Length: 495
Image 1 (spheres, rainbow, N blue to C red):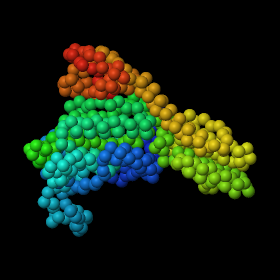
Image 2: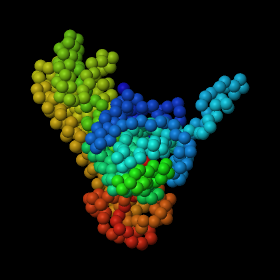
Image 3: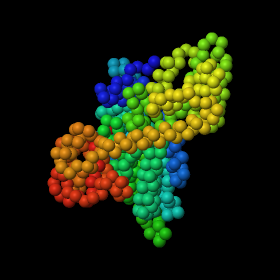
Image 4: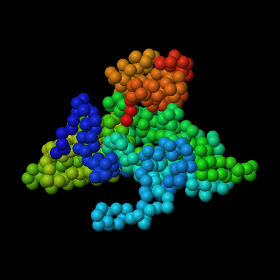
């Protein structure tokens, strides 16, 4: 049976770690700050990956792969980029080891590299060096490439899935002939991320623009989706960057346009990572364990057969028939017929792992033509007919998916507060947290002061339709300086 899980009320941070470990999603690595993704966690990532990959390909993107090692000189070519990542880079200086009689295994001094290599923190530099060779004419554009990869960022404070030194992600890198096409691409991907978060993760998000201080290093504009976790903190769930011509200029990537004039290429980049698994945990889970939206759950339905004595054959045959019916209906189903664990142990295990529906089948159920159905989201159970079970479960999975989204949206709505004074702003952050909608004068100085004094950051400047939905699009005055403000922005303490 899984270890006891700390309650959210007692210690939210420990509750989160307990969920990750009890649900067998990940474990700590011998390397500080890294994680081992266990089969349950990786199956969840594979489902996320499959859904997103299909959405990318449906919008014209192709997958490729670029090296994990990047020449150090590449990062130096774009000033903002190197400044943004310099403190997070892992640097390779030697190509082999040797055995020293006194010191043991050490880098071989004779293998010192002519140029240091950086372990990929992100791939803009090596990709734009490549694009500069691939692109000569407007006929070579657009290039719409995505890669699924790992990256390394030397984080000092880490937490499983949310912030680790190595993590898995996808990063898209596209090249365009015009600014308008690049901006359109940036916003298109923002919409893809929004659809994925809301339709698959059942996680409501706010779409917006990052402030200059929160912008991706080297970008002209960074767009994001922001989600709210159950402890009232925000989590950045995805970003899409309009890079302008910055990287094209840094790497000399020009093309001959239709007027036979040379012009620099326009660029975008965008990505989401395994931190989305952390977002799923903190959006939906409870004190009993993981709660998963059915669209992403590796196992949507588990069948637990229960028998004594000579009823085993009859019960297993019936369970296997139901398993086939559900699988034929496209439902991800698992039959757990292990005799090494009692049914009660299995019930607890699958509750902790967040399987949306559990079916229990015994001799009496077979006699009555029924089966016990338990829902993970509501913790309710009932006897239902075996006849038409696949249709019933298909509909129920959709109901659970929508219910999780509705519940998360209701929480976010209740935890979103408008304030006009700085005192009220600080009081809301301390008392309830959540998203705080407040006016900002647009200056770095005011933003920095608020962050220093309250630990809250501007999560985003909501997109026009989001601002209208939030009721944050009215003009006003900054709560600190009294200077004019065009609209409220979204503040929160964040992960």
